[in-house]
Image (cartoon, rainbow, N blue to C red; front, side, top):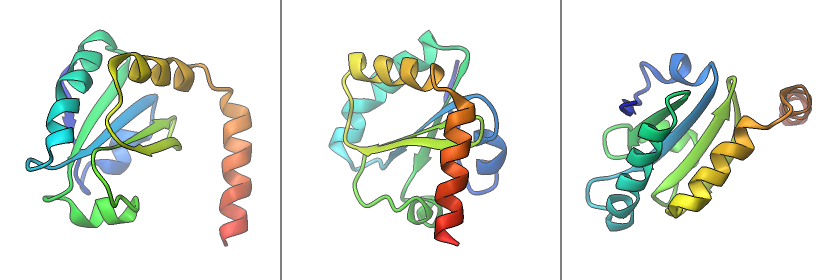
Length: 122
């Protein structure tokens, strides 16, 4: 599966269903360039996962919304709920492990914890 270019226009629709991995990157970032083929390979291996790339130079407001201060940063969603965020390029094995963990989450528990966290922020 090809990666999706994530923008503020398609963000909400992209992350609302299933497993979504977002790679925050920039063209000048050497670690981002090294991580790109790993991310691409996983996108080809996992047709059931949406792989999205967000260019932090082009989508600065969206990167700020996520609090991204270092790239590459990887964010994972499951069924519209953000479940993982980490700066730094992952090796292939770690990315595969992350995908398995996100797919195996008990979403009833995740939604409950997410709702509680949102309520505390209000």
